[in-house]
Picture (spheres, rainbow over the protein chains, first blue to last red):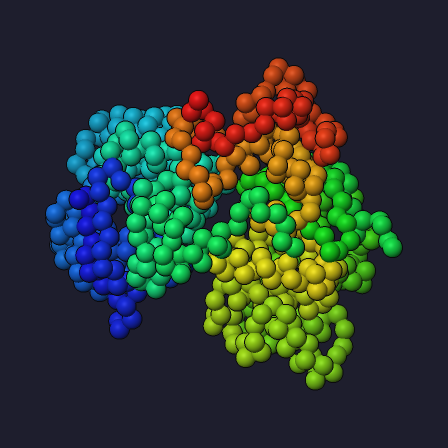
Length: 258
Length: 328
């Protein structure tokens, strides 16, 4: 088991926002965490990175990475894990980067933080860009000079450069155009194979999840209401809420309702 | 019956500095109930067209006729009357509602912006508007922050309807909403369309949304129309390679498609010399030498307008789901 969440409770004051009994991520597996705004899916990912506490939440229960308990781990150790073993990408990739550094400097700073020498860092950055199918010339650009798709590829390349084992992807394609979205989906599949990454894919888009994920967990109000192999859950849902979500997806080929 | 179109856009061009955001776009919108979808990726010019239509930004060239009157020439009282007749609803409802104003006051203000009404009539009007968008009249006393995103978007639509518009411009009205909320909002738009015989321009990047709500669709690429015609025709048999790519990129809930070898990053390149090439040729799988030296004009092919030298070949080839395209 790469990542195992057990009896996870996340609360702000007396309000519990996540009450999750069990969620597993195997090696080289892509698991979809699906739900609407406020369902607790992003907070769950932040808790894995040890960032829910700093956001003002109390976290109880267990989050184990290869058997290493992350809940209660000292900040110094968490800092070493973040990015290097567990990386995260977000919906808005451009705003995830500091606007004042060139892409190359962003790579070098991240890699140096994890003890990689400057010379090696440049080589690794170039190699990581190749891996996400971008040219090395992008290292000289500033974040605002990137398209949304390029910026998301670079965020993914940072995880590749640091040889992250787990990628937490929080709605990484929701802000992208549909043709670019398809490319990012392909890229994530490729990385699972080549880099042997395990990916927790957070999304409200069931159609994207259907394309990408081996298993899916449906969250509502902090709880997992249904989980299982993607095909089972999407084609034979047992929870009423899952059926509601599936029915709500606008679909091509159903004709005009108006 | 009046058969002239409600809205007639001819050779519309909008520049931002040296960028041609919209470049020679022509289309018509029939009288309501009727929906026209504007589809394309970021930077395709769809929002710019919407804003030009409601006179939020100026056009550099072209005409926009509403009921036969040139909208771009309007000023003073005539422009105010047009702005009553043509309303716009934005993607982000948060930015369009005054946070200090109760919902009732916001709707009353809109309802009385263009005419005087006695107090009791205003109140009844506000209640009816709330009812039409599926909110009970308790919401009158609420502030925007006390509502959910979906409820705020309903209020934004109610406010647009308050002035009894004849044309509604909907700029990605459901993109910021959760999927179940989006489904209810699409139903609401369909209901209101029948109730008020609405004519609307619907801007969306979601082809399924356009299919549900629009009889006709215009597909834009880097400021130009690449294909336009009946929605069913475009979606079932797209003739432009770009429409085909858009259609193919829609993920399917039922079918998990084979993995393709992820190709190089596919971002639209601004072509420097617009006058002498097809803007889509750097991305186009069917591009030939002619596409690099001669911009394709919009022409009629099998029931739609399409700007592609190879539209007939594209139609003959058909499209394949993107994920499967290079897996063969």
